Length: 198
Image 1 (spheres, helix red, strand yellow):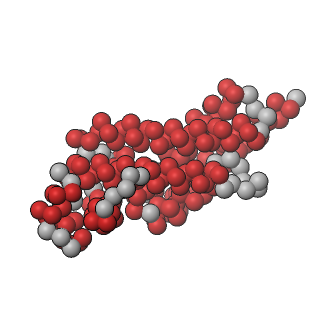
Image 2: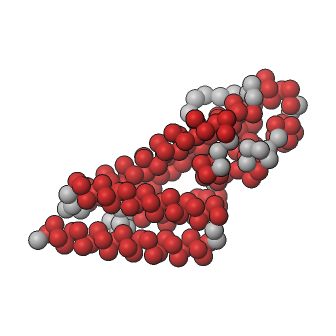
């Protein structure tokens, strides 16, 4: 992320919480400014519009959540299947990280004026997760490239499904969906490995 002034950092820290809870339409720059401890006119000295602030927060959220995903894949132990750490930890991340709550709310309910930024940004995030999964699978298992691509697509479907449960479902629904989908993917990968082994 680029270097910012302490005032901009404070504005962004408050704004991500506000936008994550109330969305674009339900958020007020006056309320954000008040929570930061400044006048609304002072906030406009840093951000020309609500769209500008929202876009900055979106860029922050993408960077933070991409770093989180990379860390999950980099830190996987030998006992976990490729990509399992991300799926296992994302619920706690959603609870604890306003940037993930903001990112998912924005991805599923983007402001019309910012769709040209949100759609490719979120798609890029998902493609990073897909790439990390595919690279990990390819490095760990004796599976053909074509099969890896199919499994990476399936994994992305699982991630998307889990994201939906985080936004709209319950912890129990998340856990059930995670267990069911992960079992199906793991069984399919095991079958592919057995076939590849002859």
